[in-house]
Amino acid sequence: MTETPAASAKNTKISAAKTAKKDEFYTQWVDIQREMNAYLEFDPDVFRDKVILLPCDDPEWSNFTKFFALHFMDLGLKKLISTSFAADSKPPEIEYQPTLFETEAPQFDETMTRSNGKLFVLERKDINGDGVVNIDDLQWSYLEGSGDFQSAEVTALRDEADILITNPPFSLLKEFFTWLIESGKKYSIIANQNAITYKVVFPQIQANKMWLGKGFPGNASHFGSPYEDTAVATDRREGLIRVSGVQWFTNIDHGQRHERVEFMTMADNIKHSKHKEVRGVGYHRYVNYDAIDVPFTVAIPSDYGGVMGVPVTYLNKHNPDEYEIVGNSDDMDMTKEIGVRPLGREFIVAYRAGGGTGHYSPGMHMLGLAEPSPRTVFKRLLIRKKDAS
Image 1 (tube, rainbow, N blue to C red):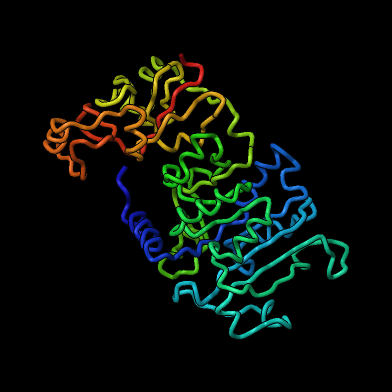
Image 2: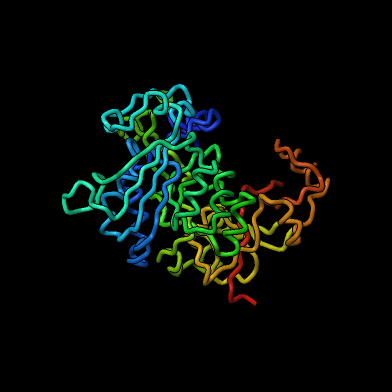
């Protein structure tokens, strides 16, 4: 499908925002609610007596703090902690004006409001005496530093918490995942699906220590944005920007990942697949690895017992009881380890002759296909049925 000029312009703006480290994208309430409900449906007590930390939040704009504060009693939380990033540490394009919530508080400081992050805490204390504990009982103070999640100050809060939930800055995803995983805590965070093959992430997924959450419909969602050059109207939603390929990454269990997925057999796929690349054609084998290439998740043959290279979007349907993840094509150290042979000079010559322009060279342990023309494949997970022997 050819990308429309309008869609291309929007994607260009999103990429530019990432390059410029414009990470201020606000998650919609409905997306938070859908994901948290998936965990609650699987385990109604998943948040009970737990300390939740929202380490990349801004309660005066973000829905994360508002959501958990509103449902504090319903969920049985022990404590809610939220930290915000200092205004002076954000891109200059974001205009900053303290809210009345802050300026009317006795601890308001005209200098610290810009230079320091803020700490918001909600505990089982009915501070205003209205008979309930909710956002009106939220207490706040200035952090000693900017609120950077990697600081010792926020890391100490991480170590106090039981569960970490947030939409972290996409420009710092690798650093955030490292910080997150080393905590050993439960978590649920939003990230681009390309993070699946990060060296710090993939081993966790392969070992069934991390998985995708219920997710966003169509693997895309609309986020609020304070940047004029990215806050374009999309799908007639003023002030929201559509971001494709976003996922929830979590180690909190939910029912969707245990659902059995009914794929067609290889014969039925070849006969009935809606994709012309498979229907009447079949499956191509890699020239340098004993596996077949499956270009679409829906076309995974249920009766094939060998290794298959499938799109990373397969992970939305991955059932760890049925399939094991053997490797991923992005990590050439891993592909070498599992037996992917290096691409030969003859293959590269044929690839160039066919119009290929990628920066590939002989000796690379990348998955190669000879049909319908010499090429390498884009981001494949290598999977195999568990009952295959």
